[in-house]
Image (tube, rainbow, N blue to C red):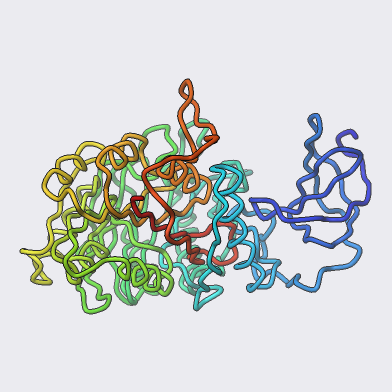
Length: 460
């Protein structure tokens, strides 16, 4: 098989990225957009040994579960992988993805609960984050193509509410009127890098990421935004470094209070431009309620990677006391405000810094605490996992947005993965400190391959 060869295949299964998998002449092919049971004419794009990548040229018979995607750039934009699949099949795929990752990566064969559905299949995201660039002499706003930093231009995103279309139009109009350029990653030229918006119950925090501290015509942009958002704060963030990190350290507030208050289950909390909040409010509520169900009234709780403190506060209300550890100063400040506003001064303590540095000291004060882990996509730091094992923490509630790193971390805690010469390998006879209690996926991200998963572990 060579590049650009064309041939027919039948899809056997979906891969971890939501792509179709088929075999031809001893080569396993990964084919985006192809569904199990479908036969198609495909073109080989890359072949190396017994692994290859192809694209669909002509589809013979669509599968019954295939639907028409809502997005005009689906298949080119890297944001969604599953818009062509009926929603109930998406949730089954995600249940299987979590189960397979645990088995293949960690050697754990454990029943995974059905994936909790999202109330909204589209328009569910409360955060929009888009790169701004320049192509063929014109400014472009959109999302990156899969595995690249090539921007796929778009005028709207159906995963976000209708305001996304107005925002994109306003930004492009402002840039054209004022002679501003999108950012070029290769040369470092251009003034505007990203636009980031957070919605909080019809209030909005808009952050424009620029390479310069001042932009001509910024008042005109605010004039355009007045027509898009009923109430909003506007920040300018300066990031002049050649980096993939979105925000720089320098923030300037040009309009509004900068932070907004929200309520969730009777808890008042604040959010700023850098504060982490789950992007799907409906699923977040289901996830947090389920996590709370594993805590008792007399428990002490340590919430690691605590963000703005909302989940910490929920545990504090139910339990004896909750400690929240968070590295981002803005999020820590929001958690402190939350603590005061909700009369939780005696039941909630917020600590700012790295979990790796602070957890041991908090465990010294609360050795029998229930530990909650909600890390970023990279997973829990190895030192934190080793500390939990060494201190024999009684119960762990782990929330993860990546099944692969979740499987790795659970494997370390249960002893199904062991360290040999600096590499993790499957143990022949697992003998870890922890047993799995439950594995429950939540569809925080419909139409994408991503899934949020809650795992509960209990010391054996």
